[in-house]
Length: 292
Image (cartoon, rainbow, N blue to C red; front, side, top):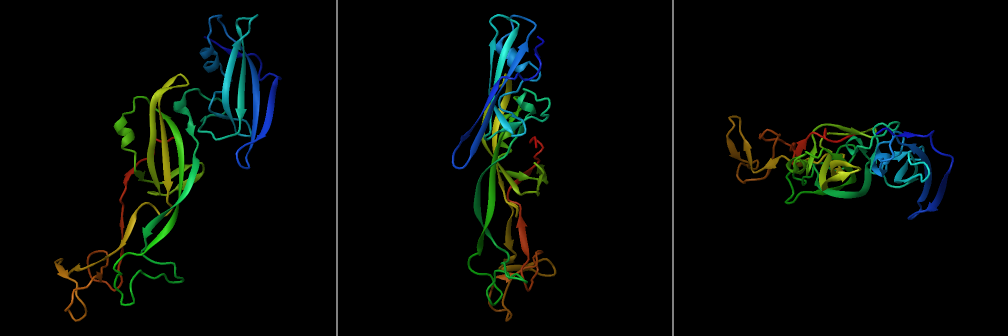
């Protein structure tokens, strides 16, 4: 069936501004359209989703970034080939945007997720050096040996979530394999670049259903961003070392009498100051499944 707009947006319409939660101001508008169909048997779904130029619910439009909350249609009682359509918009929290804002598609598999910052958290991590300037100190006692317990510090992390619609043939195991993993390489979205292993993804929800008339998975993800990466670091110390022949020896004091916890150079040999060992404790995956 071929549907078309009669002209563009009609002059009839309305707007509003109201106070939202906290200090937010909410702006809204209604747009009105007239649609001509080529058959009197055209139904509401056909008018709403098969008319080029009509807004689609859930996407962002206009210079204010208004979200289309609702689109309704009503057949003209006198001219059965014509329908009157009203679209309602307001500012708020959007989940999706069209890849081509000039020609948006009703297919949610083409929509791009919008990231929403949920919270800022802190994470305790073992430090390998302190913040002394100009030369940072290793977490060692005055004799140059490690403390009985590690020194920890807090670092700030940011958590943000988003929803993405995906292929309905996607296997549940594929979705599960994305959980609790980090980005194997740099990831770019919204003009920002996130370094490798700085984003930890959690799969929060997954729903297989029909959305806007299209079969799809609706999957909610949450990223935890740590600019220091999600790796773990440890000082290279221990009660044993490797000698020149590669044999394991007990680490002893200068008198070669008492066993101690000594510094290692990152390859198992003795050292005056310990090296820092980095462990990639999270599985690394490609984030190519995301529509940035």
